[in-house]
Image 1 (cartoon, rainbow, N blue to C red):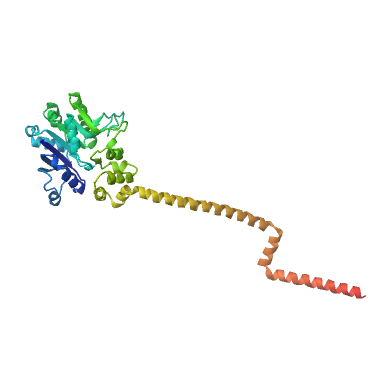
Image 2 (cartoon, rainbow, N blue to C red):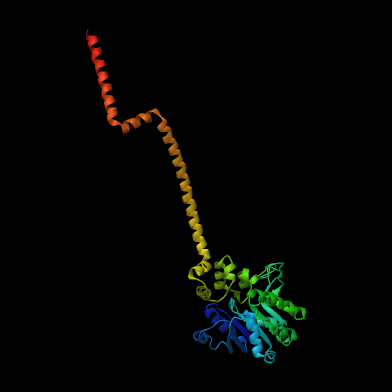
Length: 349
């Protein structure tokens, strides 16, 4: 089968991550032709890493984001050449994978005569449209989209791409293109399907990468690691159910974010455990301090009672005026002695 892949790359640091090399190496056998477009200024060294993984490479500014790049690739290839393919796949680099053999999905969808499909679907919501918070229609998510020959031969499909503008914000791209393409095709009689759907989950690919892995979705969104609470679950699922190297994920985050941020992201469960241990230690120390404060207050009260007692006042006199007390005791002793001598004389008389 004659299949075309148009793959879009973007990296704000103008780098080429190893996970992209892994992706292309593991899916290139499916395609007759691969057009690789980078919306970043890749170095010659990075271009060399791509040798053997593309048929055409194009370096461009990030004008119009991924939809602008897909438009350029389609128009540069020309509709006459495009319609000669049995199908085309539009993909970007916002996901890790493949986790599983993606050929199985192609075979299944081709067998079912699906005109347009993707890996996951965003369900319709009453709010949440980026930039406006308007309703979001149900749509196939654009990080991976497949179109068969019937669609790519249609004026509807070709006019859609001919009319794509190079928008200046990604929010407008989502509003005008990503969220609208699905309904445009459905309303014109084409059938559409997502490989994996989950009832009631708004944005499956972002918020539930665990379900994607369990249900054999071959790619998981990079952004999902920022939202999913327990990264250890994802790591365990990847290790137990796939052969995907987790090091590609950690390496990418270390290249994109500061090391401290990456550590917080990838190892946040271990950090949370340490934080809980520190909090428990803090609570223990606070408990001890509270007991000591209570004992200290009790001791103060006892001291106050003691200070107010007669014996304590005498003790303080002895402590601070020992010479005076000594002289007083001497006088008392002398007085007692005189009285004793006087009593003895009286007895003798």
